[in-house]
Image 1 (cartoon, one colour):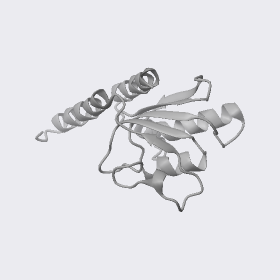
Image 2: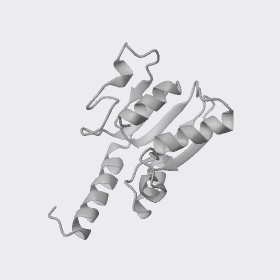
Image 3: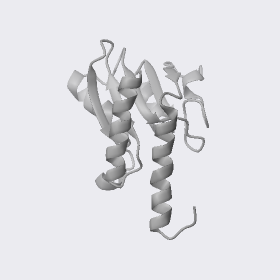
Length: 154
C-alpha cells in the first residue's frame, strides 16, 4: 500500500510545482500493475473536473476500453471529493486508499460517507490514513505558500 501511496505523493508534488492544489493519484489493477497516474490539473487545463482522480479514471478507461474499472484500487493523497467519489462509484473502483482526510470536501468518510451509503449500487472499500502526515504536510505547505504570496496571514 505504501509503495503506491508514495507514487501518489510524487504526483502531488508534481502538482505543487505546477501551481496546482497538490493532489496525486494512481490506479492499480488486481495484479498490482499501474494503469494510470496523474495529478490535479484544474488550473492549467481551465477545467474544474481535472482532479487527479478523474484524470486517472479517464486514462485507465481509455487503456482498458471500458468505463468499468473492476478490481482496481485507487491511491490518492487526499480524500476524494463528492465529484470524484461519484466517478469512482460509477467506474466500479473496488478500493479507494487515501492519505489525509479532507474535512471540507471529503466524500469517503469526513464530510460525506458515500462508500457506506446503501442507496448506491456500488460501494467501494475505503482505507484512510496511509502516509497521512506527508500528504497533509504537502497541502499545508502549499496553502501556506499561497497565503504568503498573496500577503495573507498564516
